[in-house]
Image (cartoon, rainbow over all chains, first blue to last red; front, side):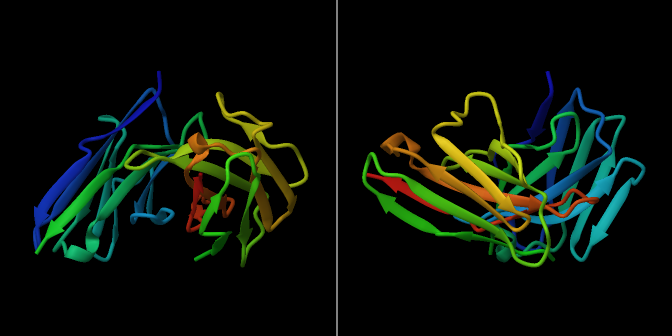
Length: 110
Length: 115
């Protein structure tokens, strides 16, 4: 069956460090993968899209990688700040149009 | 980026009443909108896909007579929770896609509390 797994429910890191979040998928052949940020009590906000033929995408302090062999995407936040604390969701494009991972709740501690 | 407005942001109602939630795309036309439900600390659960001018497509396990969806124009979709009960209390979120890039633009969500 198709599955999306985000490595952990919660991740705590020290301010200034790099946060790395993982998204693994099973039984999909996505043309692209997306990452969103959700703050408590708010709707998610789109951050980045990476296509299957792209190895890496960057936007300011954010970096996303996409390994179709490993069926995995890594989401990095460099020089993390307390304001980066939120839940991060990955979305895999595939046969089912809208499937999100359960999300990883990131807490950046000052 | 594209803006999706959702209203109301918070509603409390008595058991047995109906509640309507509106979702508007403010600066783009959305042929397709989506409705989600989210419980605390849980992932988004897609309830239905709403297409302008046609019937909504509901996900398995979602009662279409309970959650009425109307997508009357390219910028407005509504979700009506009929005869709401306490178990319907949840966070409801809509989204619309911008088309080719298939990016989801979300509303701010509606917190429904049924007493």
